[in-house]
Figure (cartoon, one colour):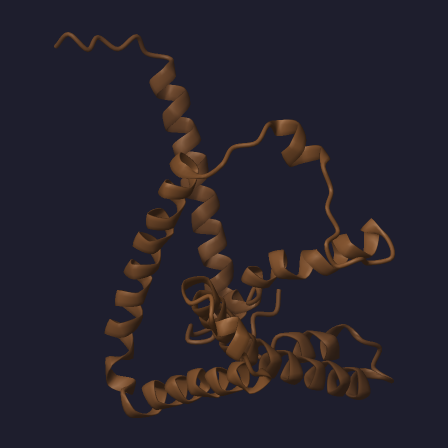
Length: 205
């Protein structure tokens, strides 16, 4: 167990052979760096394409006036908005993030419920057995791998647990103690469930 905010390049240095640990750590460090940069750019790009899609959906004439630089301009506006908020309004970030979290949960159900009750329905066979390749890839295997990128994108940041551990003192001992406490609580809960199920409770009282 090696909790650290250095993440991939630290683990690569620890696990690589001593002869090559410097170059391996260097390679993984740069891969991680560019991964961070591209991940930061991705939400702004997705936001720009969503805004353009909403414009095309609500204003059919927009497609006739569409220019390639529109998306780039919206992208840079979103980037600048993020910079202004993080630099100029840093002390309000916790409240803003809390509000956006609540708004995200409310919006999720506000979109999900109408889609479930008002959207078109199909049978299970169509959902689980039909395939579609609208981009004309050479085969369905490549189309599946390309389409999988969008589905796995929301799970980016799986190494966040390593960053959360960093403020803790005595990392190795703290993390190990947390794990042991969790195991002890689970064991106590199972024992309580077994004890409760062995009694014939009378709820009339």
